[in-house]
Length: 87
Image (cartoon, rainbow, N blue to C red; front, side, top):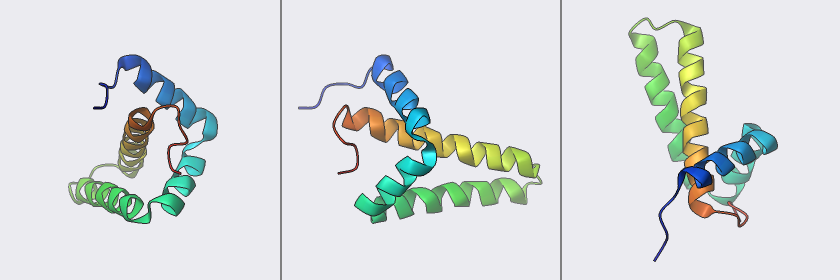
């Protein structure tokens, strides 16, 4: 049984994501789990597209999409813990 994810897990994962860069983490995920990566990116792009339809300023759409991506990647890193997350 997996243990519950804690605030410390999430903080560590976010710090790791920022240290390794989002681009590096995206590349690792796209290579190791292409279906999951495609699903995440398609979903984020759909939400961004919907925001655009409601005349949301472009900068806000980009910032929202970037934050959503960081959120999902942080959760994946926290869930997978200290082991290589996308091996």
